[in-house]
Length: 68
Length: 339
Ligand SMILES: [Zn+2]
Ligand SMILES: [Zn+2]
Image 1: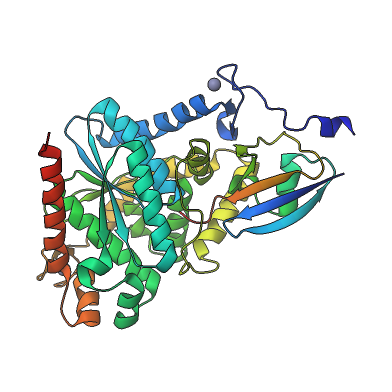
Image 2: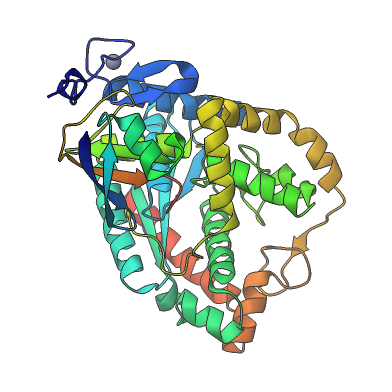
């Protein structure tokens, strides 16, 4: 189990996501976005799909389809 | 701790070098480091510009910049390519007067233009015509977003005409173009599709052709480019943006398709480009003339900008905007002449 805190941008809403693996693909799935709609950043660096985070990690999720 | 969790933030290598990857391009089966991702993106834009014929010395491209990710990514890539090929890029930002949103946007744009060393023209609508976009919309009794769109189109075109530009470049990415296209299908207005290619034609002295350098750049890629290169961008959304525009729903649907069929969005716009001739043949019957007030492109006697401003201010403001733009353009000509 890894609990990940996700700050969604631009709405600035923070959500806590419970995952089995802490892996990016699972985080995105649990957030309910298509993978193509979102970019996850950890400490300012974009995360790749197969990367995994530890319990308690904080990430930024940029929704690509908003803004311009 | 499980072995799964110990993999935390282990980063795969770039497909082309030993550096850590920052981007994954599924349809191309690539993982790229920052340098190779930038190269990948710049090549995409370069190919589109080559097809359109922009990569030549002496060409002038006016780049519409809002402060958002797409137009900032576009300006950064155009600026790199312009140095390589010798064409000229001039950024144009319109201050719309939408409270803090406009202030933040302007701040980011000024920073971006400085960092990229691109000359940028800032046009403050309120200073030129005495009204902000929301005020103009209220007085003209029209939706803010539609007035905003028409103001931007009008001013960009007027700047392009004044500069003798070859193109006005817009930050529309692949996802935008697909969303506009599908909307045209929904409205059974498929002649619109003729306008959604990588470029549209110029009518000399009246309308400058549009250029879409990000035609083959996915929205996610455009965002990634802005993020990995730390471009100054506005993250906030315009407060007037509708809460759930149809375009967003279409994009989300297309992105779920893309998840299952990587590359389907690219295939869509490439096929669209191949079929442009057909859609143009359907659209041919539409004739355009000049506005009797300002002389720019108009479907009827009076262009929509002059019509809306006449309703809002009691007189058409196209001529005023054009003379102000003429003055601004003359001042940047002077600056570029100075040693
Ligand atoms: Zn590399
Ligand atoms: Zn007019």
